[in-house]
Image 1: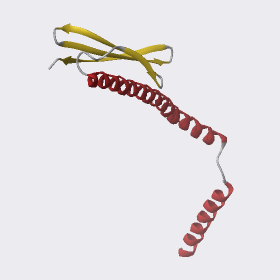
Image 2: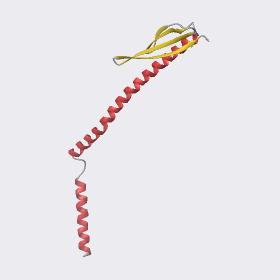
Image 3: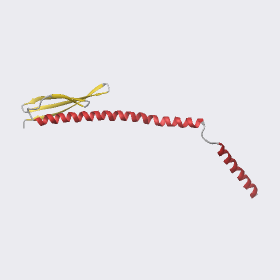
Amino acid sequence: MWNTLRMKLRRCVARRAHTRADRKGFTLVEIMMVMVILAVGVLPIAVIQHQARRQVNNADRHTQAIAVAQMQLERMKSMGFGRAVAGNGTVGNVTWVSQVQNVSFGLDRLTVTASWRDRSAIESLTVCDLVSMR
């Protein structure tokens, strides 16, 4: 009885080893399924990456415009009350225009508008401050 059981066990193991040895590699269907799963998983990541890069570029341009406008405003403030003058210029891709407006006796409003091109549209931002006689 033990001998027969042992013989059947050996045949079963030999059959499994034989079938595993015959099956090397993957079928075309398995490869196609893996490619579909990868495409469905990787495509959204590529789209998100593209959008993130575009938003980072927009933020960089905006940050540069804020820095240019603030620098020009501080330059005008340093001139002091009554001596600040309007002007314009370009720093990198940012164009700025400054204005001085008398609000009331002894009070001037300094305004700097920075503009830059973002694809086909022109974006701009404005910073202002007040300078008094005192």
